[in-house]
Image 1 (cartoon, rainbow, N blue to C red):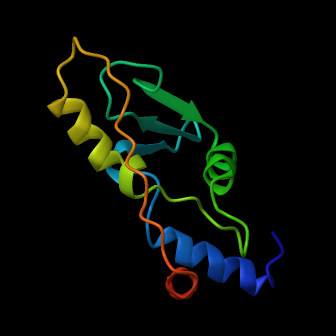
Image 2: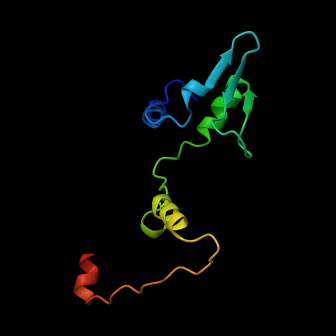
Image 3: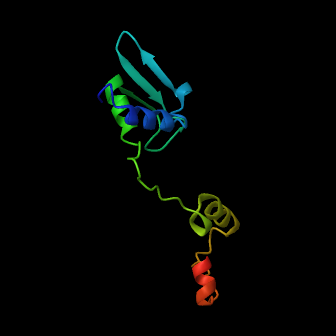
Length: 115
């Protein structure tokens, strides 16, 4: 990154306002010049710790910074995490039924354009 790239530095600062890494789980060993990240999970593929060189760690974090103008897909309504979890908890585990699909009401053309 060039030192005079102010646009990138501004974008990076705005992105870092919402940190993607829990800083209390991150440690730096000066002698080994290595960063260690401890996962908050006790099992699964992302559990445990991972050690990387500082520049490699920064490269991994920078990969997740979206490009300028990039539109992030957000899930809402039926597909959002909270309603899916609520449906999963409310449904009996033994019954596997397809979800009920309710068709949307037909709107007048003028009403549809206003929405």
